[in-house]
Image (spheres, rainbow, N blue to C red):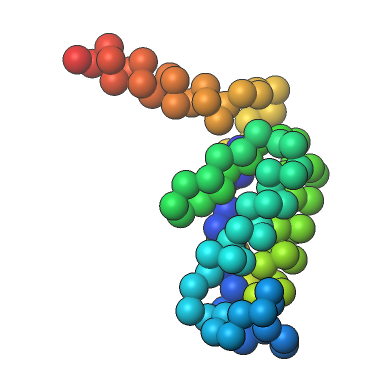
Amino acid sequence: MLLAFSVAPSGQPATPVNGGSNPDASVHDAVAAAVKVVRESGLPNQTDSMFTTIEGEWDEVFDVVKRATEAVGRYGSRVSLVIKADIRPGYTGEMTGKVERLEGALSAAE
């Protein structure tokens, strides 16, 4: 399974996180907390400006998303979570495989 997700806090946290005085000014610290959870999971992952994509089995991927969401929850009174998944049993290495096939198709079209 490939799963792309985006998670962000909103509202004021019960207490400031990491000594911050204006927690709503930017979400980069909250996103960093989520990405840290993902990277420490050991699952293949990739982060871009909009989403973090992880690859693994259903239960392990959703466990990581849950823990990442909980990490972000410390930064606000609510959390927004967007998920998109490609569930294709029996396939691994699709995080790079899909892109390689796309690039091959583009090269063939030239």
